[in-house]
Length: 80
Image (tube, rainbow, N blue to C red; front, top):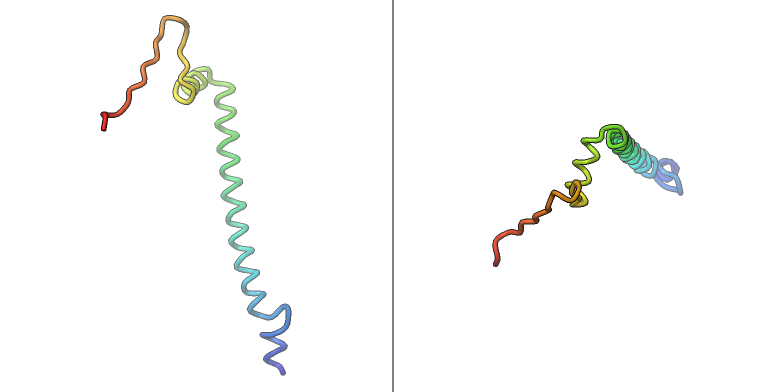
């Protein structure tokens, strides 16, 4: 009967161990997400305040060019 009280039932020792492990995993996930949000906020601030960074982002990500004097060439790999 004592074994059932410790290991059995709805909230046994094994459930407690499992919940603690899941809690640690979730805490680690939350910390990783906080780090990601912090990095994204820093990048957003840099793009807002640094014109060169904004220009580089516009060129690399969106293929934009500066004025009418620039042409954009996109190179593809070798034909297969």
